[in-house]
Length: 254
Image 1 (cartoon, one colour):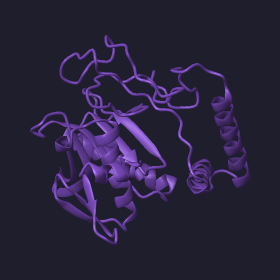
Image 2 (cartoon, helix red, strand yellow):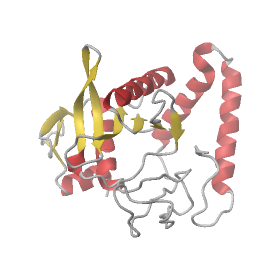
Image 3 (cartoon, helix red, strand yellow):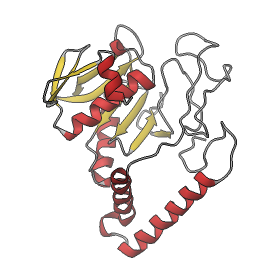
Image 4 (cartoon, helix red, strand yellow):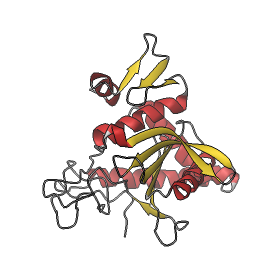
């Protein structure tokens, strides 16, 4: 069962008969599901609730953010408290077929919203591309790139996201709950997922565009660099490792 089916079954979302509109039930907000960004937003909302475990009452969508004299709209805000007063994670959702330059602009936009709202973490996603940041307390404009955002109840992140077999962290002295130490709370790690050919093609196109740099590098040179990355990725996936051992080809935090 995929996220949309689970969300429908649990009553988190609802579609009209033609599946043109999606309603987020907790906030009673109806949106145009034909909008490519809305598809990403729906999946991101359900990921936060169903995979990362955040209570739906702490996840707010389409939140107004005051930026100087202007009012902007943040796609998703996750709060650290039931009263939804302490901003914890700010999420910006974009459509899949985004250029690398457009995605970087979205990252800057999300980060500026996070600083304005006092968020601790930032997640920018187009579903096929994700970037995560921690906002430092003392120098909030200094970005700290991280492998993932925390799951609900996990205070300190592991330095990686993907492991062989996708297991849970049991080191409760290092990974504590958000509010009180909880020996039963474990960080979930992720196994690599099989993607469709069309999705893989989109990833390759975006990767090549990023390496090409909008014409700053010779296209054939960019293609050669992409070949190297593909080789490293395949080698890492085929390299023998035990369950629970992290993959090498991913973002690590020092």
